[in-house]
Image 1: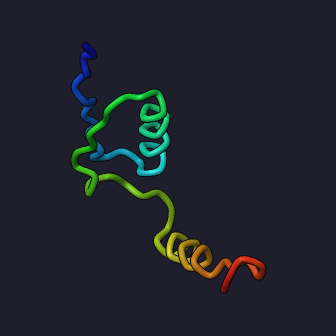
Image 2: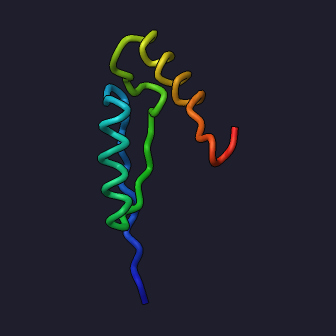
Length: 68
C-alpha cells in the first residue's frame, strides 16, 4: 500500500513569477505534489513594454522548413 503525501501549498503573492516557476518545476520533477495559491498576486519583473515586445517576437518566430 502506498501512502500519498499531501500536496505542498505555495503562496505566490509577492514572488517573482519566473523564479517561482523554476522552483516549482524542479520539485515537480522530483515527484512532489504542489498547489499554488494567490497566483494572481505574483510579480512580473522588467518593464511592461519590453515584456510585450518579447512576447510578440516569440509569436513571430517561424521555421521555413516546419511551417509558416
